[in-house]
Length: 551
Image (cartoon, rainbow, N blue to C red):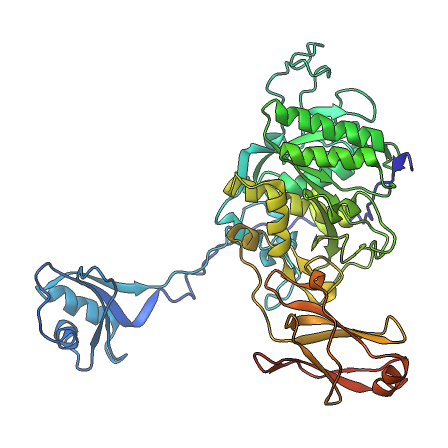
């Protein structure tokens, strides 16, 4: 077993150009229609309703022929929606209705709009992974593959009662955008040289440094920039007019440093010590819910596996990076990401770019990787300021932040339920089809409202020949157990179905047909283009033709 874990981070740095920040509003009042122009809401006074025709009364109230009434409630409380021809203005209809002695009140039928909570942090317009508003250079008509954070913030911005652990290099918790969210050990008196809480760690005020064996959770910028960046993505203070925002505006960050030195290297044993420290703190009443592990490269360690399993029993989610080698880690398992296969609290995260494509450096794996999140050009806190980095190390804390939001909204969820919620509500993307657990990108908003992506019409994304006898079709919306594959209009034999490729809505992303060597050659002649269509017989839906050739 390898004795150390290499830090999994592909890092690209750039200098910021400070751009004057202007307020951004969730509803453009100069362009949005405030109310319907062909109807008003009216409430009749008690006893005003009569046996006369409701539409006749509506005509009388707004003094317009052809007006009609619609009852809004079943309580018969006199509230009605009066529709009229657009030749009558809303303002005139309201005036006439208010003059009618039978009317208690009249008002427009106001429109409401889905509101996105946008923070005032100056660099938010460079944080594309959180929202389209966070993409300064993006085409406004094109949606980035973000986690829908602004819609989630309408519901919750986190909780100061939840602790997220950064098990990493150290974290500059004194940073201007992190200090308010720094976890402080409630039972430890800073600087007195005593083990006040009896946990065998002296002056562990903000966490512990397992790399150096002391309480200094921040050594310096050259060594601890990685953990500082990760911490900001999870929980930089939001809407404070400073710098950036984390996914969770409200959370407490505990720094457990076990990586250090010029290579960002740490031992498995110290990772285990860090996890056990977090478990012990939870058992002592600290509400530790998430451990962020933006690292990898070690072998399968029974000790590490057991520690993560113990964290599950304590109610803690373990969020880890898929890794940056660009490999399918189903074929060559990478740890701790591969623990997500069978540990209910372990969730591994791949990285995607703005367009939703899997990052070229990101590992993937249908069995081993749970979900994807933005991991390219991610702006976050950095020692002494702010910077942009990329890697699965950067996508992982976005998912940790989503977990914090979930627990702030539904505190009774178990780690397994939080993991499943994030995975099942992830948004399927073509670049992720069949290579992640649910082929999807994490969505903070959909996770909060528990919205599983609905079934879609069949679509072929790719055709593959992994053997000389079978063809594999990847795509979306394939009917489970009954999809028909046609090649140049000729149906193939019954497809083989693997339920592990099912999305939470029941549709499949992969079909496989075993034809045999000679039939495969006849159906897919070498270097000859053919068209492939998938049909869902229960709905009659047909996918667009997908042209492919076997080379």
